[in-house]
Length: 105
Image 1 (cartoon, rainbow, N blue to C red):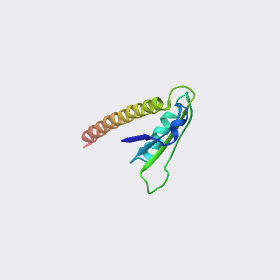
Image 2 (image 1 turned 30 degrees about the vertical axis):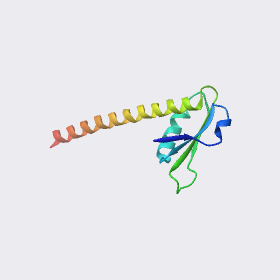
Image 3 (image 1 turned 60 degrees about the horizontal axis):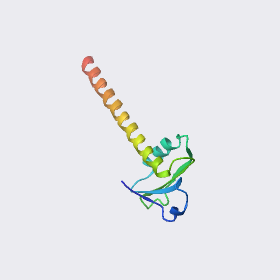
Image 4 (image 1 turned 60 degrees about the vertical axis):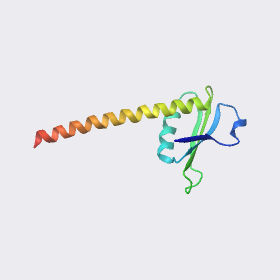
């Protein structure tokens, strides 16, 4: 995953940043927005896809406390943990489903 800060954004406070995710879209944007917007220190969190023909996403974070970059890093780690938990629960349910089908046959 390639991430950069939006050009021209470096003049604003470190608590407010727009990040550009290359080769990403609504799947990551919506999930990451859900995670980060639930943090108490976040005043604003949103994302846009500037143009449907471009494969990039702009992700904006405005904070009342920590740096926007720190919040982004925390959000990505929390999203990864949530994905790992979801996969583990799915695998567990799949094993149980297969076991119940063997018993019925």
